[in-house]
Length: 334
Image 1: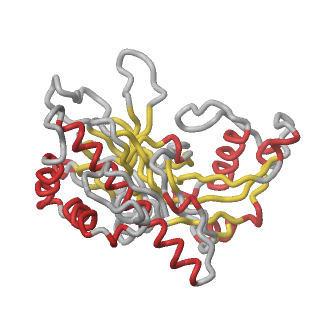
Image 2: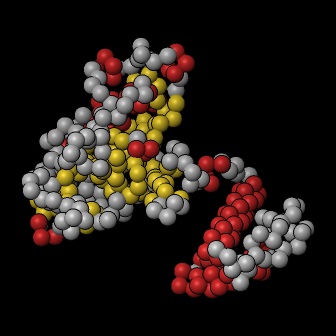
Image 3: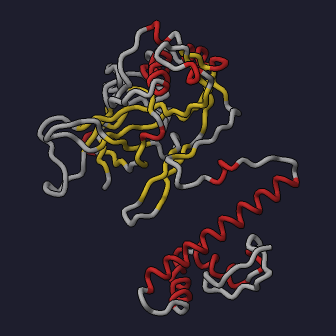
């Protein structure tokens, strides 16, 4: 039992358990209003009456956050109670704390054998140098090298041979949540699902007067693995096995030529897939590099083409595996 002050604008008995939110009809009503978007004005009116009418917007915002925290605490407590009754342990990472850069499940329910995965997809350009690129990515992060946009620097086969992936397996996840700060300085998150909402944006390493501030990519796989390396540049203590998350992505490039975009020109940024013949058309990315999800609109007038990815069937066409071509261009919605 814990004492709850009247900081949510609702009279709560001092002996009321904080987690037992349902025992307070007033809090339940407020939470119900909070969940109903079109009826949310009722919540604002209720809370306005509990302010001192000075800077009411700030006070209402504070009270809404308190209600959200109370609901989240109640959900966590209910989840722990249910799972304990079944004899199942609950990890703290299920809380999905928005202060984290991203959240990805650590489940191993969907293992992927690396060599079988590549062998079964021979002829798909997305799998060209799949394992060498993966080992380059892992080694670059283990060595804590600066990310150069496509890679962490050049490695040779001798370097790659120092990388160990436990069981030669990677584990597939369905989604990853990318957390970010909104324009009104609040925390939010985008759920990236390769089958439904696969596009992300990252900071661009470009410099110069015409440098683009952001790069864009389509996530075609969400994975994690247990990795290690015996590379001589690694300290002995850093050679132990560790968990590593990574995204398999297909990169977009900016529209070449005289196309100009921005508020000055009244045009949205225009991008298109990098040709599959490019060495870095498909690479791996640290989820922590992603800023947030991106909303891309096909440029319908430009049409479609199979020239960018000349394959009748490819794992890269995650939105519709039956498609045999791609949209030539996309507009980045702002």
